Length: 354
Image (cartoon, rainbow, N blue to C red; front, side, top):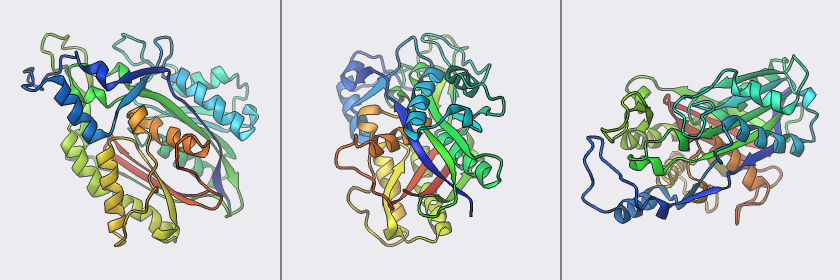
């Protein structure tokens, strides 16, 4: 039976480090434009307690999202020992396109996937390059699409990338701006006929009633800013409640489809959105099986890298596979779940055997 497996991974972590202390002089405001009674020391301390974020990475001004994507793609291609002319698809997940430092428009013409194909120097016109907009779960959805193409017999090798420069679309007066970061992660998904390793099952959902606008574009909290400029905004409490209720169920659906037992799961690579939220999701997932969360099952990178949206899961996966996260490793035969939640509101999960 034809399936698919990941044969190479790569990530690009920007070099500009933005620590929590760097926000001490920021003028944080409420949505109505009023100030906070507490100082920034208190705001930042509470922020760290909830999200776990100590620092995050921003891209150099000269680099845009497609550049970060290209850097991560090069590493994944090298890791897979792949001839780029053999690629059938390049699937690139993002949310806002290429945004120049200080710019106010997202540039998606041509698509970011086309830009990466151009940078890679691929001549083969049958290598189809396109973008996917699926919120933070975009990279995982790209892997699901690659798997579908391969099982349908129309592809053998796909490059899937997640890249974003969220630092360029945040409202600096919004406390939530401290969450977001820049980065890129990529993988090569190839056809396999062996059942020893690869994608076993998946689940995906879109909730588009009142949840549709939990993440949205909105004006700056500073009423003196240009009304025509919009920034990423979110209803944090609603997202938290939505995620801890619905993500565990989707993860269970994917695991049930796989025919495997909860005790077979050795790692959960979850979207690095918020440490407390991720911990609650995984705890509730195990509670569905009347189990306790095993120690070390959930590697985390949010503390140092922040939330880079579509890039968090592939970056985390690459770091663990390359031995770059302390006390975390993946062994041959290990079963993992890759899961994410984000704007849409979209949820997905993959059960994978290494």
